[in-house]
Length: 313
Length: 175
Image (cartoon, rainbow over all chains, first blue to last red):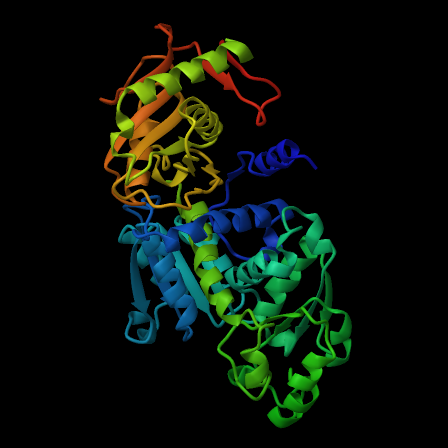
């Protein structure tokens, strides 16, 4: 390809496209084009975090509220920082000290927050479908961003995993369209049934055409990317999960298993890690691991989602 | 305006810039061109090579600015634009910077570009080079270097700039 053709195809890839969604509820709802639009937007926004002034005025005057009914440090911090880098104001609505503990319903809580003039509610809830309830008629009129609902979806984690895979050095050369994901084989290892991270990954990867294998260390030999899910002690059910030790022995990612995998295997983990259980320390800190990159990428992806969903009146 | 005419206009813009003395600070702080995406980027690249050719000197830094996040009509648009991304892998502090765009009309893009540039540092001086100035200004903004002035008072008429390789040909049209 000549330089001019090269430049041309680069510009065509950047042809103006638009986004019309107000909510981000799950990757199941998005088309492949929409997913790529978020990833493209996130790519342009990584540059903001490298500037001397780490802010753009896109969401000046908008207000985002973190409404977290479950504990989370990473996701909440990442969303707050993302909103601030876009010049939005952010508040944390602390559920334990609020009227929720006095018996107020989710819908009433959200509508009361919205009545204070809020443009986006970023919600995490233990019940699957809670963000969808708010986004439906009779809910709220502002944007609703799902930050994890029960065992259903965690769309921004799914998007940041896709983003990390797409931007990773081994895959970067061909990762400019729909095709490259179709050349990939991704394994997701863990308690799939209870994992919203797995579900969002599966929807996203499937739409972009990747081959997906669930669980099974024996299959590691052929995969390009492995996403190690966290053992969720808070969601363990006795029958499916006899013991942590057994899980670790059969499914944990160890140095020995890594040695049997492709040399450039990309290792992802949504965090927080249980070192020595689903993944050993030496593997988590190895050159194959992109676990900290995921955190940095999460910021860019959440900026992209907020910009796209909240940018309109 | 066809391909040859556009090349002439760019050569003339380069001569005007070199004659202007904007390069007076260029010894320690070399000139940088910053194009406003997307046509301004292509124009900035051409202008830079033309200045390099005429001056017979070192390579000029060329950046490309995406002003999507800085627009004042962001929240009245019905759909959100997917940003194209800013490419600026050099520092602007203390340097003479020339902003480059294809058409100057309301002045709103230039206002947004000024805000965006200042988030990358503090240039010594900022000038504005424009291929076509079509009047109808809404902001108190004027270009320092103008390729072509069009006095089309009719608001309905549009100036369309085509530049390779984004478009199939070079051309400026009044439609």
